[in-house]
Amino acid sequence: MNKLIILDRDGVINLDSDAFVKNAEEWIPINNSIKAIARLYKSGYQIAVATNQSGLGREYFSQQDLDDMHAKMVRLVEAEGGQFATIKYCPHKPDAGCDCRKPLPGLIDQIKQELQLDNLDGAYMVGDSLRDLQAGEARGCKAVLVRTGKGEKTLAANEGLDNALVFSELSEFTDWLLTQDAERRIA
Image 1 (cartoon, one colour):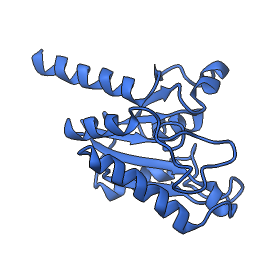
Image 2 (cartoon, rainbow, N blue to C red; image 1 turned 60 degrees about the vertical axis):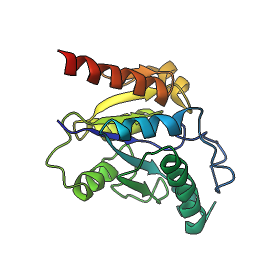
Image 3 (cartoon, helix red, strand yellow; image 1 turned 45 degrees about the vertical axis):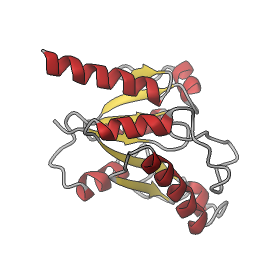
Image 4 (cartoon, rainbow, N blue to C red; image 1 turned 90 degrees about the vertical axis):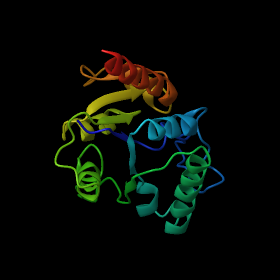
């Protein structure tokens, strides 16, 4: 079983914006998300990020802006004692025809390859939209929907969520998962 958590970024780790998160100043973590990532890491999980960033292809922000946002995210997580195994993003516009834009599983495949995993059995894909969950499920990840970001809207649509676990936010999922781990160790 892989102790891997794949996280969508906007709406799961940081506040989302319909106008796109365009720079490090606009990149604002959701309450407790940074600590949740650090707790997962300290509990033996590898943490990966798989995020659609079409704002890059649309020229809403530059590669440097994206690098700065990710540097801020990494810095905050490391300050809490956590670490990311990898961060993968799709820079393409929706009509580009790439295989890395979720709901397609290209980013998940990149993570699997980089981390040299034979399979993704036991891995979780945490997102706030159906496309996040579909990308993970296509490669055998367990689907986790958080209500932050677009999560409430996704939940209200109630399509394709039959196998998804639902939590208010990343920290609630973390509490649940670490409790499950502790119960397995006791049993």
